[in-house]
Length: 304
Ligand code: SF4
Image (cartoon, rainbow, N blue to C red; front, side):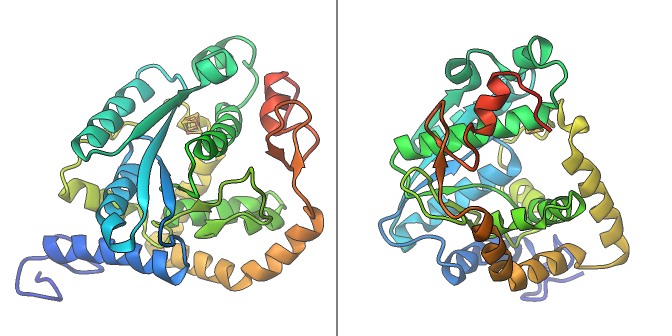
């Protein structure tokens, strides 16, 4: 089969492009998303949350390429949760990639910040806590805190179309659709100096296209998965959506588009509940509740 733009052989079907046109298509989609949703302004300092996986490495690469054209500065921030046999490998990828592309990198660990690695928490004080509940709360806290410390005007994450459609469905099935107001290409319901706005330039790109891009670019990536991912609810929803999409093309895109059409209504609903930003009584970081989720978990209280 031939590329729809030239006579070369296609390397990807739907959209059907040769290597050169496929790579260009992905990069143009990212640029269009940034422009249409005003994700980056001139002189912004963008800190990219990077894990070493295909999404964050692709994001870092494309933003680094767009940096001179859109006039912003860029740095990377990695979180070391302390997951033996997994994170140590992906951090090598991050380190090598940042060195190769002359991108400044900071690494922050759970051990230094909270006293123990994720593995240790789960093996000792938090045997009954779901790994992703603990890990997700800790990571959100550290990303916001250190993006702020490293002077980010925006924190960019590698969330893609699959991640976002999964999050919308998860919120629906849990009976908390108002939480989806926090989703979207640019997030944050209420502005606050301690909150760093989050942007998702890969928002409209399906996971399989990012996998193809990173493969064609020959990024030296660890394709292994976190050992705790099997326990994640997100995985179940991801599988369900993948199966559904085999029969109903563009289902994930339709979920995203429907959500974006209704985001303003959801934001109104959410602002009713979150009129102002609170600060955690313990760590003083922004929090929706008197004590933030991270501090509740650190005190090892039950969190559902
Ligand atoms: Fe953390 Fe869960 Fe992601 Fe593993 S899968 S890195 S435990 S959030």
